Image (cartoon, rainbow, N blue to C red; front, side, top):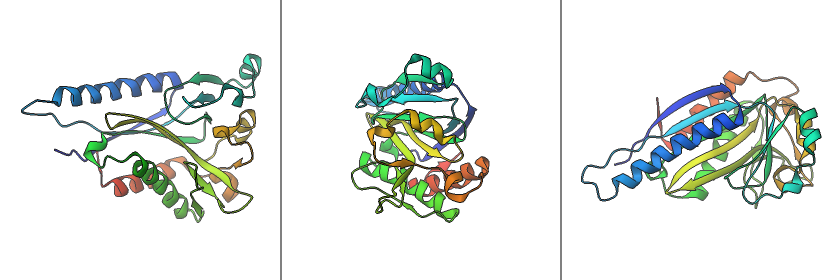
Amino acid sequence: MQNKQVAFQDWGRLDYQQAWDQQEQIFAGTVRIKTENRGSESPLATPNYLIFVEHPHVYTLGKSGKPENLLLDEKGLQEKEAAYYKINRGGDITYHGPGQLVGYPILDLDNFFTDIHLYLRTLEEAIILTLADYGIAAGRYPGYTGVWIDPELPTARKICAMGVRCSRWVTMHGFAFNVNPDLDYFKNIIPCGIDDKAVTSMEQELGRKVEMEEVKGKLKRHIANLFQMDLV
């Protein structure tokens, strides 16, 4: 029985560790239901969540990441008022901070489609469509996840990073979409381990700040349409 209902939650601005703990709790609860459903004559529907959040300045390193891609020492992190965590998603190092829209879909893909490649491409498509709403042409860079501006040019620049974890087809972590962040924070890392490509934001591309609530509304709608979700 597929459950297309997805509970939308906006956590506002929340400390990274707190958000990670809350994600893990929801994720574990969903995996537990799936485990208990096996062999059950009346299996329970698994819940789905779409969470939006902004974090205070933080650098996170994925499982396949290299610690040397963080270019700051302990003192440097303190000066930047930034935290640093090694975490259990895929991907290398990235930055989260105010003005960046972070999305954590905690979905049971058995409710949608069991294809992690398609899952990532669908999230990318939602970002691409949201950017198109603002007249920003974006696309994919062959061989890399995430969303890029001018991917076919030497000036290719990343506007959205992605790193997910998936177990028993339940997802967590997600995407980091640069709306109005302080891009100087990216200078302290080799973003996603790619040292020859720039990072950009909606603000930088448009030359103006963008209303975050408006972006959330548009992105939420595109995600719901592409996944054929019933957002509640």
